Image (cartoon, rainbow, N blue to C red):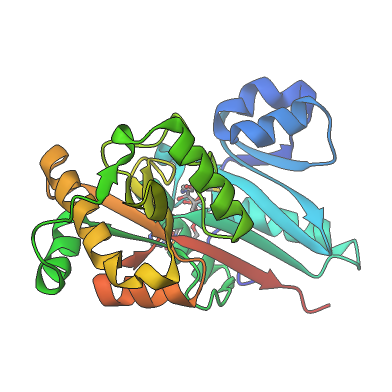
Length: 291
Ligand SMILES: CC(C)(COP(=O)(O)OP(=O)(O)OC[C@H]1O[C@@H](n2cnc3c(N)ncnc32)[C@H](O)[C@@H]1OP(=O)(O)O)[C@@H](O)C(=O)NCCC(=O)NCCS
């Protein structure tokens, strides 16, 4: 790993239960809880002139050190603190011959996280090939430009918001979706966090034949968290999406961010057709050790 400038006046040490109170705001909650419960997690912290200003934590899984929390406080950045923690971590890991790499996964949905990309590039980490499976982000106005060209402006009466569907209909759709292995929202189609006015379903003979479920699960953006259409009704897909977008435009300003998780080739093609310039926001970077 190439060394960047050394951090001056910076001390580095391991964080255990006794040190946790100084570093807890610099660690993600799951990492702080793991240190507090004395689980097998490795946590490092930096202190500059008596102020705890950075922390890193992770654990070994399958021969790879997974970094689950990594943060330097804004006023202390670009002074070598982040590099110092990673260099120390690598020294520590190199004592164990079974550990072959370290890895970090993160989203750039929050502006704060964007510094991680150039930082990791500098430190010799390489992005994992995701084959297009990623979370993509775009705005309502970007999406509408492409949808406007493809679909009639009006949606058929058979497309209804979840707010107008009974629990029984949604429960049956959830059951069917699970049986067919369809992409379902994590919290189910009856989840309380779904946007009931934005989530829509195509109903034929009282049965859900397609749905587009929306929540805020990805970093607060309007998230298309479940999209499924029965093959024989595939032609209704764009009308369904158009209905969701039109309703979103009534409720939210054009600059509102949306997120879509691409889980298979079909959803990748859909995304590329809808918003060719959508940005990937989820990354895994890895640094392999050459021992
Ligand atoms: C990424 C982060 C840890 C870097 O910490 P840092 O102490 O500022 O990093 P360093 O000073 O060691 O930077 C080393 C090199 O990385 C690169 N780098 C770091 N931040 C950069 C930025 N914002 N833009 C461009 N390059 C950057 C530079 O090459 C830098 O060397 P230089 O300052 O001599 O040019 C810090 O910005 C941070 O905590 N960001 C938020 C991270 C986050 O969101 N964590 C949550 C998910 S786990």
